[in-house]
Length: 589
Image (tube, rainbow, N blue to C red):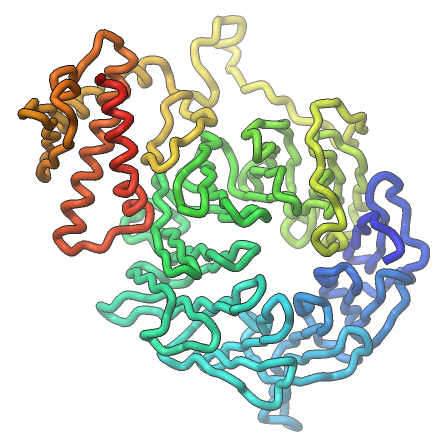
C-alpha cells in the first residue's frame, strides 16, 4: 500500500468518490471517480488491498496501492459483495430470476479471484439472508448452509464436499475466526414441546456425542452469534419476535455463552427489557452489552461472564469498539437523539459526551483515533452528509450534501492488525471546527408558570451512575444515581433482608449459617465463633456481606448435590468458598 492514511469511500446518487482521511481530506486523484447513479454496493477487503463496487453494469475490483482497476465483471444485477478473510476471493450475490427462456433459473452466487476477476465457482442461493459463504481466517475451509445441511470445502476446491453437518435441521451456523483447530457453532430450532439447541463442534467431529458444548433454550425464533477475535468463545443471543408477556415491543432476548473448552453459561443481566447491542472487545477478553428498558444499562463482562464494570444507564442502544480495543463508544441512535459517550476502557473513564443528531452510520477509523458519523438515505433523506471526529469530541471535518442529492454509504478503508498502534488517550484539547447546522438548545423546556422559580427536580433522576462490579458478585442494579430517599430505602431493605436470610448460631468450634433452603457448617476456630461481631461498624458490614455470599454458596451446593446442573458463573462462586471463609476468619479474629 502506498500510504497508511486511511481512505474514506463515499457512495451516493452521484456515484462513488474517495477522500483521504485526516489530516488532509483531499480527493484521491489517482482514483477514477465512478459517476454511475446505480451503484448498489461497495466494499474494502479486510487487508485493505482491494476495493470493489457495483455500478449497475459491471462489478469492478481496484488495487488500493495504485487505484487502478484490476478486473471488470459483467454482472449488472449484483447487489451484494463480500470478500474472503484474506482478500483472495470476491463473492457476489444477485436476485434469483426465473424467465421463460430459463424456467429453472441460473446460478446467482458467484466466487471470483479478486486479483484477476476469474470465476472460481457459482451456486444457486435463492434467499438473500445468509447468502455469504463462511471462511476460516486462513481460508483453508469454506462452508455453506444448503437445505439445512452445512457443507464444507477445503483449499477453495468447490468441486467436492469434504465434510457435512447433517445431524439435525441446522438453520444457522457460524465458523470461528482464529487459528486451527477450527470450530463451528450450529443452531438447531426446537420443535413443539422440545427446546432449541446451540451445538459447538470441532472440525471435522460432527456427531452429536462429539459436540464440545451444548446449550438448550425454549424461547428462540432466531439467533445471532458473536465470536471473539481469537475464536475461543462465542455469545449466542436468542430472540423471539413477540414477547408473550407484552412487556416489550422488541420481543424477548436472552444471551448465552459457549467456549471451545466446553464451558457454557447464561449471561445474567440486571435490568428487564430488550438487548439492543452486544460487542466483543478486539482484545477478546471481555464484552459489552447494552440492555434494559430506557434509560438502557451498559455492562462490561469478562470471559467468565462476570460483570466487571457498570456504565450506568442512559439513552443508548449501540456499542462501537475502536480497532485497538482501548476506546469504546456507547451511542443512542434511531429514535434517540444521537447521544455519544466515549470511554477509555482500561481506566473505565468517560473521555467525553457529545451529540451527533440524525446519525444513521458510525464507523471507527483504522487508526483508532478518529471516527465518522453519517446521515444517509433512505433512512433519512434530509440533511445527508458525513462528519469526521477526534475521540476527544472535536469535529474535524464536515461534508454536507445538496438537497437534490442523496448519500447512501460511507466506508473507511480497512487495514490488517498491527499497522496502527494503540492510540494513547490524552486529555489535551484538540482544535476543531464549528458545525454548519444550528445546534438545538440543551435546556429543558419550562412552561411560563414555572419560569423564574427554583428547580426542585432532576431531568434524568432515574438514571444510574457508572460503578465497578465485584468479581464473581451478583450484578444488582446500582442505586447510586437515584434520589437520596430511594437510596436510603434500598439500603434499609437490603439490611433487613440479610438479617432475615442469614443467622449465625454459635455451636462449639463452628458457625452454622442457616438459610431458608438449608444450612451449611463453616468450620472456624472457637475464638472466631465467639467473636462474631466487632466494635467496628465497617467490619460488621463486611462480615454480613461475606455471610450472605456463603449462604448463597450453600444453596448452590445443595442444588448441585440434588443433581441440578449449574451454570459456569455459579460453579465459579462455589470455588471461592475457601477464600471467603479465610476473609471472614481474618475479620472476626
